[in-house]
Length: 216
Image (cartoon, rainbow, N blue to C red; front, side):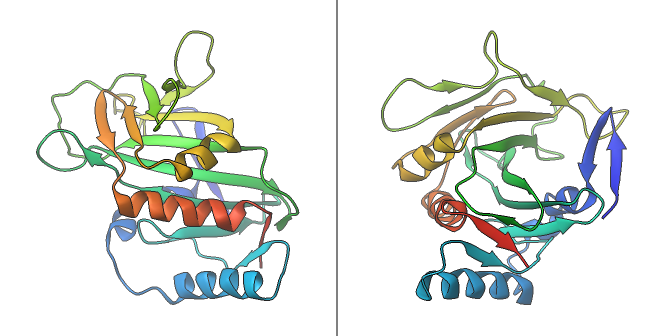
């Protein structure tokens, strides 16, 4: 699958589409159901890794999976939309992506990519800031953009202001978030909180990739 370049950053075309309106509509998607069935059958049959069918346009809260021929790489991801603290539309969409060479990963991923993207049209007067933090039930907040941290702060179009933060974190961070009862996300100048459905979806994602995964 080809890639497109925007503002000096390469984005997989399928990944960009996963952030679009298709991801917001709770439509019935045969690919999504095939993905879930394969994962469940893998667990029931005692397979050590989950087997996912390709799905490059998952609904919000569902698992996407795709093999990129040109990259010789697979990606498995989920999009979440935590509840904003201010009245109105939710301002930020989160994407959690596991990438690996080939079609299968035989163990838990070492790290994942976290992406916080401002949702187009929400709070247009709020300047997006390069801030990305997560607070769980216990422990100090995790600051992904503090001093000494490596991150990307990019825009989705040449004429747009920066509105997307990208960081790489250990898989344990996502596993801990999935096990937490509350997950508060501060990103791009907004404060949000994962809804119970978001945490449930994140747990399903962690369970799916936590012992290895294949895209076939």
